[in-house]
Length: 217
Image (cartoon, rainbow, N blue to C red; front, side, top):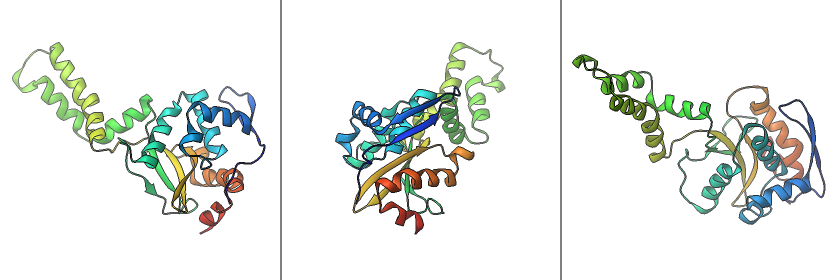
């Protein structure tokens, strides 16, 4: 059995310290803005919508970035992100996650540093500025250096579909994907596996009664 709760209210704490009440009806209207009910009818949680709403409001996430990865999972359309991965450790064991790109300085820097590795910046500088030749630094050299340490790493990871970002968490049931929430994979109380699991139990298990069996497996 799966279905939306008839009416639900969520009291959330915004980054500015204020409290806000968000209803399930408001979340459905929000989902309509991005075509979610048409794309995955009956297979998304209010928790996912609430996460999208608050992330857009508080940190500037564009929900289209998440919807794009849902489309990739549902239709096989191209994705530049890492392939989906199943959690193997409790309390999220049995669920799946798909990366989506959060276009923020920290997320882009994470991908760039992973691609460059320990000595990538040094090699790029040596290649661009030719220190052994004693040449003066030119605009062309600077542009080449920027390309090698910013544009090229992102392009390379895109071509290999290995960009990393935040997590879209979902479950598989009867051959279909059920989309539950989004989460930051960095550690911290509000991003820990335990916190995410508690949120899923509080909201998503009431919407999808089979989910509790997945979490308890």
